[in-house]
Length: 76
Image (tube, rainbow, N blue to C red; front, side, top):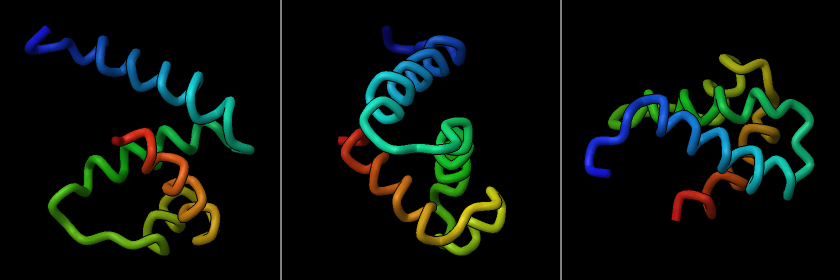
């Protein structure tokens, strides 16, 4: 599938988050992980920080760092 639909990609993302990350890690607010991923994707090519992401999501800097550490292996 060379040009997957937006719906297909969204379903893949939901599956990855639900099966791989939320099940494996102690994530208290699972919906925030998806929001964090969207923010990171939207900021590709621009500078952002853990502090800025935390403020937007209402999370501590430590929680943002922890959640990103969960996402990193999934991106490989």
